[in-house]
View (spheres, rainbow, N blue to C red):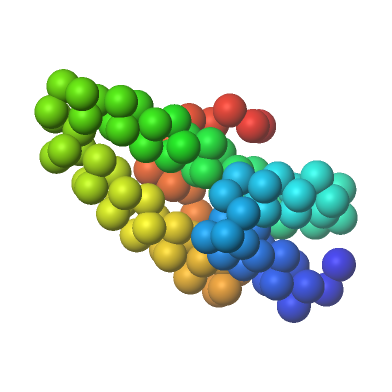
Length: 107
């Protein structure tokens, strides 16, 4: 796979999640994991990020019942978008990026 193709698929693994959630990195990973080691790592990291933050957002959403969610939910949501944008920028420069505070469920 050419470097420009790797870059495109790495960016799509991250940016596609704005519309498709975890589906975008999952599809990129399943299709391209054997064609490029970098796309494999990048898409797995994006997939783990999406799964982790879905869990975090669900948990903080539930914690609204206890009122602490009113504080936690916006913080987690802002962190989600900030880290997603960082992932896109790193993918655009073809740098490996390990998201902080995520569960590494797909390895």
